[in-house]
Length: 125
Image (cartoon, rainbow, N blue to C red; front, side, top):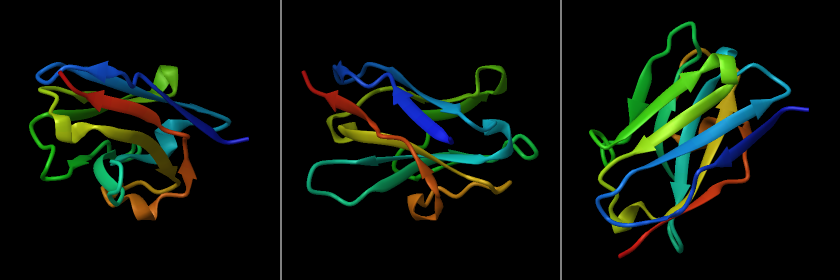
């Protein structure tokens, strides 16, 4: 059974940092492109970052998060990470990872097939 499980969400202060994890089971992440997206209350889901399969390893980011978000992969741990620096209140939302069996990733969250349940990030002082 293919499964993605996110973790690392928390209540954090503006200016702080968080690292979210997306651990896969039932398949090898290295062969999939993985995307991170978020959904704030009352807003549409927004794709924020993606990483292509290990054949490419290309990374892409939404303009709204460039320079603050970093996506990475650890194939040995079958896990993809999303590091968020300089947290802002507008980063608040449920962050989900998703995968698709394609080499090249797409920041657009609508193109992914396999989804995790999400992890809550709240940025507040």
